[in-house]
Length: 131
Image (cartoon, rainbow, N blue to C red; front, side, top):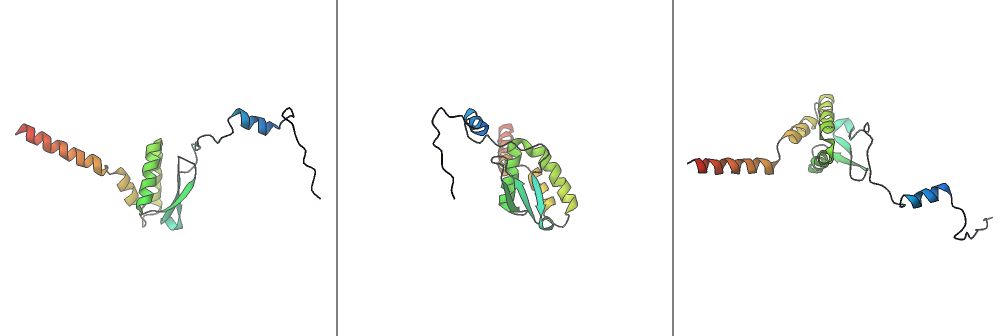
């Protein structure tokens, strides 16, 4: 037997939760990960990994050798988690030496393609100016 639904007027008291949601705007605030929360979690003997996306707080699954994985690592670095990410990658490379973690660490430490191309162009231009 269903209960009777009461029609509350505008002047009726609200619950604490309802009042709190109205005070804060009712929307979900921007996600902030805890300092001790792992950003990279290895799966399947180190062949796959979950990565915590700092933009929305969701964990996504990637194959370690995929381009999407390195894109997620770049997102972590841009969000200010680069130092911790590199420490985690070193730990994972030591723990899973047969998988692609050492390659991931080398790729993250390598300069970006755009930066190295710009550096080469600057060297060529300075050599031409000197001649």
